Length: 116
Length: 110
Image (cartoon, rainbow over the protein chains, first blue to last red):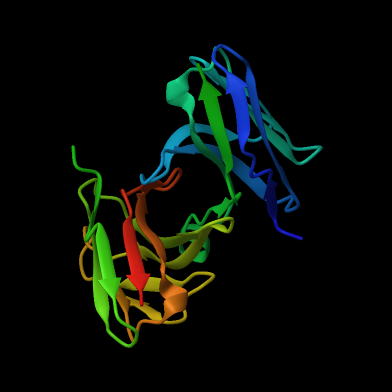
């Protein structure tokens, strides 16, 4: 079993729809959770960063963490064609500087297409 | 505002050749990383560094080497290239919480 599971998609939605992207994880030590957006032939770009459980909102994006269920979500409101990309979840545990090096564990990414 | 810069962007290597992927960051981050990304496999950590002179192996280090002589630079060396090293390589850096990626280097070994 992978430490982080993410549905690869593709997920196709009409413009203006609310998009829900999800990841599940098995390592209960994960404390920090991130969402990255990756356009084709580009590097991953940090979208959202959360610590522990709860919600965090930034514009049209909301990140949600449910540690009891080991489940994280990214919601995109009023989706736009420019949101078409692959979305990667990432997470890490609370480790020391020399011991852990701030290493992240990534999901495999969900490909999203927002159509006109 | 350069961030993380990788060169080359694209490269074709023959089996058995060697090459170095260059990476430099101008954000004074202590942590630097090399990942490879293969279709359906996500990002796999090759090597990482917590500061100049300190490097350590990640999940998939075989066939690669790194060095970190300065805070800014973290080159990745491929020795005796093999077809299994065909991939997209991302260099990244971090101040300690989140990680910032470069634009990637597309490598094909034929």
